[in-house]
Image (cartoon, rainbow, N blue to C red; front, side, top):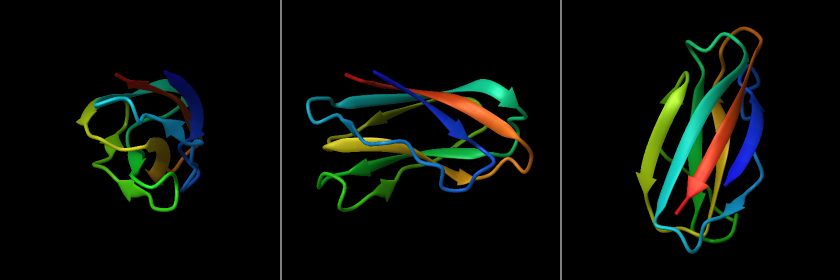
Length: 96
């Protein structure tokens, strides 16, 4: 499990990579830290080649969780659309 803080008013704010090579399921939880959470989008990105290529999965708008069934080597999270006002979140990534 990894927990990262993202500035959801900063486009492309990105976490470091997380090794998920032994997992088949990844869950991303986006949890309120500060500010508003109506417009921002946080995306899980997957890399099949240890960070040389990143593929963006379906984003999560606002707060909540999303489950992914995938086989890949690494994942990270990235702000793909900003809130438009000061806003931060904690993102919990669980791989199993």
